[in-house]
Image (cartoon, rainbow, N blue to C red; front, side, top):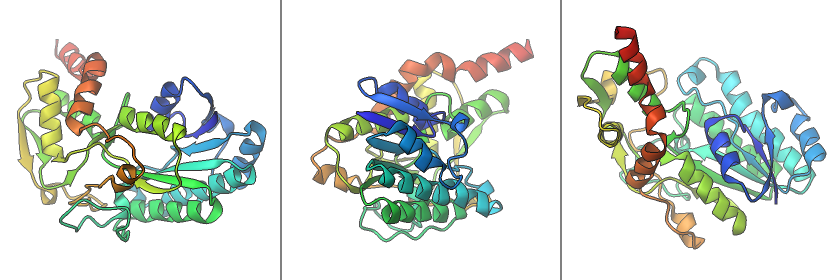
Length: 294
């Protein structure tokens, strides 16, 4: 199958392109021009003639989006609509990556695909607008909502926590009142591989199974890396940010279950596999800080 990956240079895009070894992959990056430019995605689709377009491109600076609203909407809504229009023009199916931020995070259970979105941030609103643009401009589409993503090279909260632990005096304080499903790019890429063999249309949640807080996630990562880093729990209120973080980011992968897909890996097993494969790279901040002190 011929697959075009938009945002191929990003964290998820890089992982996905490396995983699709049994497909013909066309990587769309900034060298192919601005994907939000009107008509540019359609021109790329007509040039490359993909059967599937995967949109990994996004404006992900959650806090900056509060003051750069136009940039967030251009990267998350307008660009998605342009890709959808281009994919539809050549009869390609569009797989679009969305986020847990389309929900307000107030439920006392994991969010299901049938729950009404109610985004509370400009980032979340721009991602919801992107979903709606995809639905409107490309009837042949699938939307995967993911959350708490980490992968090779970052950026992610895992990489930020390691950098802070290596460069700031202990203890490291991590928020312990936001719950979610930490999800590895490897797990998402593996799911997309399975989905290409058994594609379905519609909206599905696609996170690793199980739940924890950022405090629990960081503490487990340090244990797996065999790092003696004191970690203390703290609250969201102790770290005010321009964009409000959902207290409940948990997603229920109900549609994947109904479609007969095997469960996503647990967040613990996915993290253990990632640390095993990337241990040297993940420990690099500690080596750098030690070299500077010496």
